[in-house]
Length: 299
Image 1 (cartoon, rainbow, N blue to C red):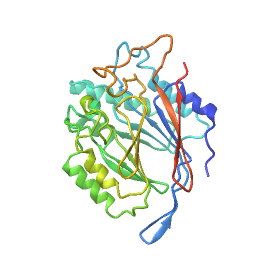
Image 2 (image 1 turned 90 degrees about the vertical axis):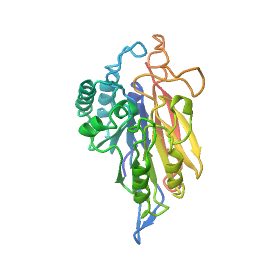
Image 3 (image 1 turned 135 degrees about the vertical axis):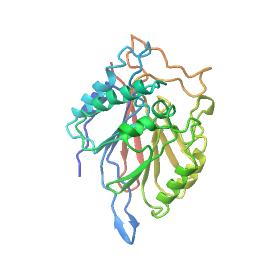
Image 4 (image 1 turned 180 degrees about the vertical axis):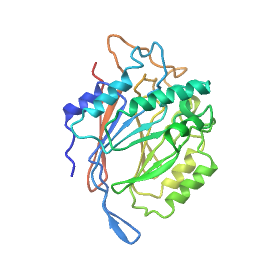
């Protein structure tokens, strides 16, 4: 069993924001294929909405926060099992050459992570302009599954279609992936946009997300981690599916519907990194019940 990362090490990450931390994740034993498997304890780090290539007043340290976060993860006494970036790795550009240059720069920076595995999924800034073509050149498939210590991870792409939808083909793929699984199988879904209608007027939704949630609803333990909205948010959808949004490493956005638009909140020199933060997620071993603690970024 892995030792838990201590709070002092957590706070090293807190200095740079945008980190979702899962510790001691464990689900009840479940049956699959006639045998019983145990969901072992593990932890992972989620970084989201790094927007590499962004340069503007809301973050005078726009080229510094990502490298500093990489350094902080590498400084942990015990490395996470894996790191996942949940989209908007780079900032939107309509120039294909510049898009690839930003992705190459991002890839080179994150290659310095001293972890066994790093997973990527696109955001609309990475993929909507070319249906994910450049993203796939650098980071592989935009949707896929992987298994880790008894947990089934499902990565969904709800950004490569400019309309902000998953699409019929991917939904069929999802149905086929889920069909042979026990309904006791713990599922973790990783995506960029929220799968539910958080605030569609701002694009904070997935047009056919309800169809994905309908496929996931029969499973007893489903948790969704996503990005896109640059702030913490928790939502429980039908079937008890819990959705957790991650804060950003670049700039915060206003609360849903709290203003006439969703422009980045201004940088406050008196409170640098305000609105950027991280979260620690711990799971009760036998109940797969999550305890979440949000901590602010310290300047």
